[in-house]
Length: 131
Image 1 (spheres, rainbow, N blue to C red):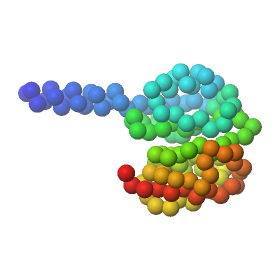
Image 2 (cartoon, rainbow, N blue to C red):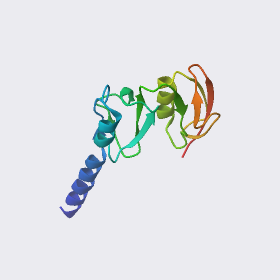
Image 3 (cartoon, helix red, strand yellow):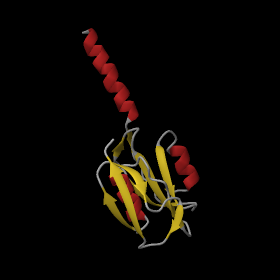
């Protein structure tokens, strides 16, 4: 019986770590920042409104996942994606309309363009390694 209580406590703590992603489209970045306190978040661009999001509304994320939000910006920079999963990096490439080539499997360890302005259709090579 004691063991059962321990497992129940562990399960409860796991539930608290998981969050359901809301719909952040057309909301101000300021209001979304308040809603996503404690969640790893990457903002693409410096706009005032969210125009695209990953993962989609209703997705369940845990503490290791990143919510990626594209804003209504005049230009975009490709952030340092080191440590991001391949699916998160693919989402960033898709949102920015850039052509990404992935080498390896796992998590991002390197990229050919980092923290620089990028244009649609630009080519980027992303290196991955398993953790």
